[in-house]
Image (cartoon, rainbow, N blue to C red; front, side, top):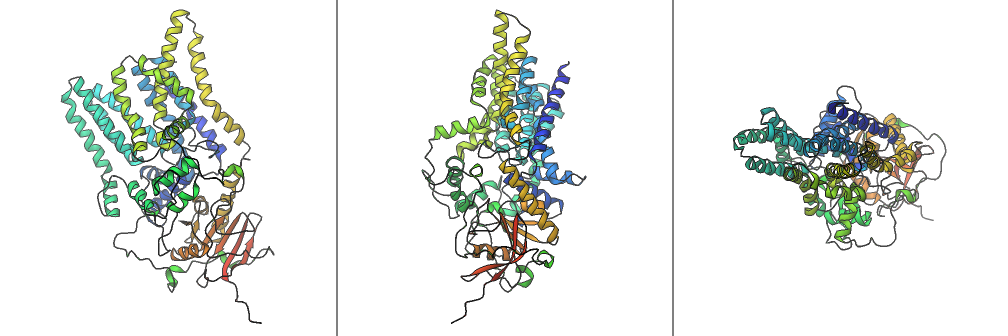
Length: 607
């Protein structure tokens, strides 16, 4: 088989594996995956780059733009998003094999391609068991890795060939990486430095004008996004993610053990200490008015709008929701209406130990070294990292390989050093490790062949490493094939609740829920559920013009003893969440959900 056919054969196998995992995954939607889908739907319907009803700045735009484009040709948003991720993950084989062939040999390229196809860190963008296995995919990582590693390969080729097409492609790929994730800015700076160093070392300064042209192409491609950020934030910014993080710092966060409080410490405490409450209080907090979220992750107030948002009282057009469930009456008699204490804080009610982290004791303090080790081994098995360590020593062009691999390493390490260590931010280490591990395998094969030449040695060694990487995914696939895991069942329940709301609420209704999957499956405008008391949640929902608020036992909820796994609270212009005794008038009920209309309980009569 020719080298070109080997590349496409490995790409095809990688794509088939990812499509099988997508099929088995079913209804499960990761949080940020849902936010990207909502952004794509907002773009598709002409509402702009908006989330939670406001202009969005925290997530980058290319992923939702591509998904929105695919929906115009008849592909559903969820299918489009996942096909894009699977295709990007499979195509990552191409630039990795190109670099391995250049720095090592054809056999090493085959090994590197096989490693990329099955590395668990590049397959967990299809997670089955967050909490049991690291959840690394939130919407844009496969596309970012493809554009970023391809930019490195094209930069190497441009410095060699010098042709205009390679320099123009380099500018476009770097722009794509930046528009996919903020880390693309770090990668672009690293590749620019490596390009200048490569041209200088080879005396090819005549190519600098073409490198400048590549920079101009990239700048032209990202200018619309920079203008959008300026118009939304009122200042020039490279990304809105920092702005969103700063707004989390202003939220009433719980100070985590060993931290100084604020958004970054809340995330660090959540990721490494299991302290969910710190993150909830920082990210899901309401502002003092109770009508909007504090964190700008959920959107930025439109320029020119008043900072004070009305709470909806007396504004029938804005605060009053749309029609409630087509006026349906209760389908059957059910349990007593649930009591809703207005002043109680939101509480989490995990359905089973498999969906929750250990509670009770305070999260343990973790040393920095241990955190880094856990994060790195979350993206690649420790034995594979050890296999990759000596790989660079066997490169035919060791200095060149080190020069061009440095931007990939910098892209993974610098954000973690400046903010906090998070496994999915380190995913750029995986293709880098695949390249170096292939180099180590080739060096071992050369030594073994010198002592005792055997044609099966290469296939055996590459095959053993590939099967070792594939084993965790195969185990997860077998466990999830019957759609019986806890997360799959909860995901199916969210889909059923969303479908129920889609059948009964008008098309212009607004839904408030903690998980975005409810709004996605309902096909309705979505607002995030705050972390707070029932009274404040209802005030916020009315200010947002919501028709229904969805509470769940699987996420933080102020309901003490809900009769079903999901509780849908219908709001109308006469509903109120004030008072000591608040009840829901039953409207409908199924084994999965209870639907009630908010109504204040009558005051007790005097004896």
